[in-house]
Length: 508
Image (cartoon, rainbow, N blue to C red; front, side, top):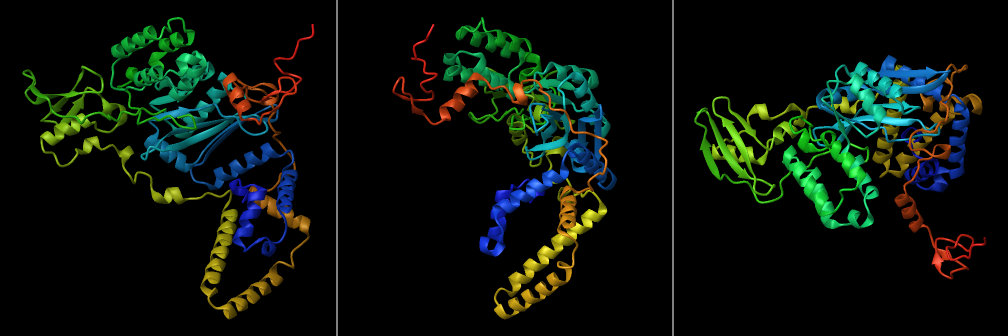
């Protein structure tokens, strides 16, 4: 269970439940904790060397597995990896990639940087990942070079936060990709950049969200709506809003409607999505206009979510093509309701093949690829498969014999004979433990270390000891969740005591 990140205490409870109770299982939870402690002692200072060895073993035995690492001053500095499934996902869904560097992991404070996208079920899918010791331009450039080496071609859209180091690296190495800022990171900053009254004003939040998320309006309409909102709520002096308006071409959907985003969504991994579903009245054909200069094209006008505005659908009869001014198909890859209304007008019973994109098909990823599991070596794979077969065989036999107590006891006696034959003739406990630990890790413990563990450093947004700096709002929220106690100075149940009570008289 340690391979699946199950803790010692939970593993003990699961094993007791599977084997009929703690009395049957034997041992205590502390034994499992001691095993985890012994495993950590067994690894010692070989963390970096072991992970490099494991990845290099996968490069040998796993098909199409990519792994790159960098060492500085004999210490692991950064690494990148991607497997065959990730590369297949990138081939089909790699038109928009989120490059998120807001994670922080492990005791070394290395930054976890995943490359993620959206699959045909609108779920997050991982293309690759990296670990960086520093968040500077050189580190991001190295990571992007590894990404291009593994996948071959750059994405159409790459999204990130507002880190200038990322922007510099993306502009240099991905000049053909359109760089966009993550909407989720921007909108989460909004309450911190406004006064409490404005941030909790329901009218302002509704106006703001309807404006920035609306993919149906054009650039002029967005700028006019933004100016009206700023004037109405008296936010002309807000520096952050002025800065974000200056960067509007990097994060507002109205400014990149022509770029196919493949339904990019906002999520916990930090990825953006534009919800273009219309929830108001259904679309109906209002007028039909024949364009004189183009007799094969007809135009239809529809009501839209934006007040006092029509959408126009152009249908080319000779080519069988449809185009709508909402540009939902160009932006998302799915036909809009306006085009469907015109198709119903012509009694079309089947959607043209040209409008069924491969990336939205159900069986685009082979099922056998999703079920495939890679081991570090062929020998480890055979051993693990044999262990799985043994567990499955024993489970099926016990289930089959559970109704016959006599045969079940006979089966138990045979199992005990095999146990006496193979288990009691093993070598010393220390050797068994070493072999068991090496089996869990997947590689043999190296006798000499060529790569030392990374140095613990502070990255962007980190305080002392590598801890992330918390905002005032987050600190106040955590403080509210703490249990209150009686203050002997103000005689109230609060989150302070007599020593730091605000009513305490100050001694000058």
